[in-house]
Image (cartoon, rainbow, N blue to C red; front, side, top):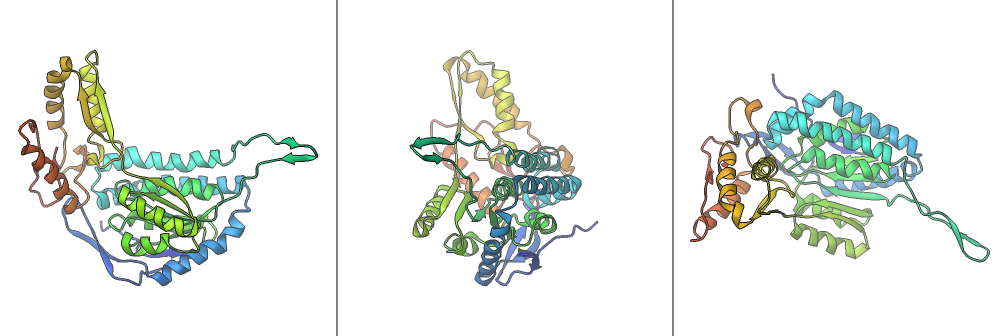
Length: 366
């Protein structure tokens, strides 16, 4: 069965093709081309921002109950089409189908349902009289148009994390998925266009240096939301300073693990095998450094080496895979370069893996 792809940009309430050069969307398992997707032009960005501004007045005045109902409807639609979303995410990101279907889609659905509840349960400070003859109060107002820029490691989940609280709070959004992983965002755009009023969410694929840069500097944007690296975050802050945009930045993280001498080594190994390598380690909370006490060090290294060497990947039957390939050739080569630099150090030993897998995709054996 041939998989169908949504390729239209959502601007206002209509879908249209991108007007600029095509970006190659690849299958990380094979390195083969899935499709060429034309990115948005500056004119299309302008029209998407204008549509979001036009929608803001009405959407920001809806009641929490109305916005909650919309979020619940989106959740129900994703859940009803879970297999299609999972298959598309697995294709575009190389994720094992069990991880996409069993781990991520339920969490995405739950995200929309969580914020559907949260928007109806907002708390605020009690009003009081702090000056004779005057009563103080707090009023919650939506910010305005939010430019949301998502990364490639969890495309649909990041979209949910960004959209649900933003539109739940009465804001409108221009959303830019990663140019490497736009397919589930464009599929979800079809649902958003049916559930939400025109212009509340607009979806524009494209590169960061073109579409993203133009979007974050746009005077019609009131807030910038980014999940990405520190260098990009600095550019966001520079752009935000020009027009005093609000910012929400989730940048690169590190997750060191400290193992004390009285730790249960078997439990530690089980946790590290799962949370250090999930999503091929492409996770800002991946357990990436381990500091172990002297008494447990040797056993931990031996047991963790054995555990990691048993991680299943690259199997033809995708239901047996535990992790997938890296997202791109560039990323695979970058990871390989880290390992090669480590090999050159006299005090470092590579105890398992550390090699490119020659199966045509972007696999790297941990």
